[in-house]
Length: 243
Image (tube, rainbow, N blue to C red; front, side):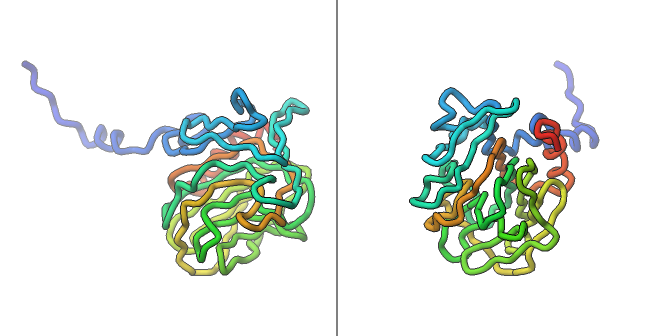
């Protein structure tokens, strides 16, 4: 019987390394993966989760559309009963201070006060909300606080990658992005996210901040992507959306 040589130092380092980026990047950490180009058999009601974890529910005021060579979800921006203007992705898997990343490819269609991403619950400090504001500014908030994000402005009728990555425990540890430009808020409140919901298009229990526009991709990772990793995802999708 042969004698097996122990791993070399280099072999050990290779074994410990994170997975090589795939398409889209970092598949092993991608716990929600929705792409309107592969939306599933019933895209008008269900957005297939390509990670196999949790299909999304397409609600009343959101329409699956194919136009100009692209498939996407069209949010009507109609205020009213929650969750009509949303796509919901089940309960929030990122509870407490779980570090994570949310990415969406969006085209806002109007300058208005509108939520595109909601993670958690409306209870005190139990959510992260990334939101459009009048005047083309962006806002990051949690229950009981929030601020305009310095240096970030959005453009209507243009596709862009919107993302946030949370690496830490406090509000100031949430880094928000449009394409590869980033910004954050300075509040040091410790957050404690709850499991109630993960969704796009509106804010829980406040159906007056409805997103009006298109969404083509939604990604959620169970770790905090760095700025360079956010850029890798951006480079992967930008050609599709003409950016």
